[in-house]
Amino acid sequence: MDINEFIKDCKENVLSGVGITSEDVSKLFKIPEEYVQQLGIAANQITREFNGNKVDVEQLNNIKKNSCSEDCSFCGQSAFFDTGIESYQLPSAQEIVIRAQKAKDEGAESYCLVAAWREPSPNDFDKVCYIIEEINDKVGISVECSLGFLTIQQAKKLKELQVKRYNHNLETAKSKFSEICTTHTYEDRIKTLQIARDAGLELCTGGIIGLGETREQRLELVLELASIYPEEVTINILVPVPGTPLELQTSLEKSEIIRMFSIIRFLLPESVIKISGGRETNLDDSGEELLQSGANGIITSGYLTMGGNEAKKDIKMIKKIGLEA
Ligand code: SF4
Image 1 (spheres, rainbow, N blue to C red):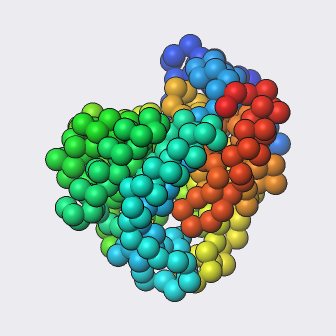
Image 2 (tube, rainbow, N blue to C red):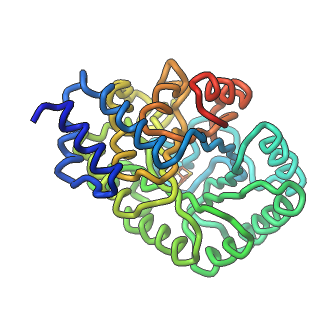
Image 3 (spheres, rainbow, N blue to C red):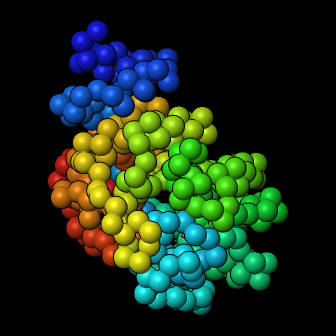
């Protein structure tokens, strides 16, 4: 079959609710580069059909920075690597409330509290709960969390506090995972997602591309994500951090990045697909093309360990391409 016809057929199957098979997904990963733009256009049509024109804009707050006990090879916050990144423990609730208010004023719909640790200690978890209560009380923005491994009791407590969504990334394909992390397993990550879902939290999961994984491994990751069917998928594009084992990793071709986002849209038509870290660094248009090739969410105003575009600039970009923030 002609490749344009194949892409069109896949799109029709998604739009009609039939969906596509894993063989189709495998073929989409192999279509020649000159068809990737066509793939992006089809993914955009699916996005508009299922999600309208709204772009989900989120801000992050790194509430416990650096000195993490885990050894994820891409991460500047691992205690295993000397990256020179500043370290701090939990800031006061008052300070976080001010930042959450600023995020809301700048147009963010959600505010995600992220902590660089394996799992929260009981004491730290209580402090985070208090911070969430204060944000709920004083700001009224949708709070999301990314706090590492959770017990079911902790997950239920977050649900009680009206946390909407829990982020826990798979990071990469199962077959690649032991190369990028040895201090915990892929199964640990899957288990945490299950705990969060059992507690009634929505799921945000995804990973980081450009770690040296093969296309086959990106296929493996997207099929795993599709089997989980999270409410949100978050994809980071590696920005090599000096001092980490991946500091010399070469960047992915732009067409591979577009291919990845587009294919995820075919598999998860209704989910938020968010472009996370690496958007400004790896893409010369800051993500405009990706927002028209399957993605419908961004993180603005910087990331966990690096800066990013100001919210105002991103909102302007979203409006410029005819979408809504
Ligand atoms: S990715 Fe998360 S768990 Fe891994 S080292 Fe970084 S902060 Fe720790």
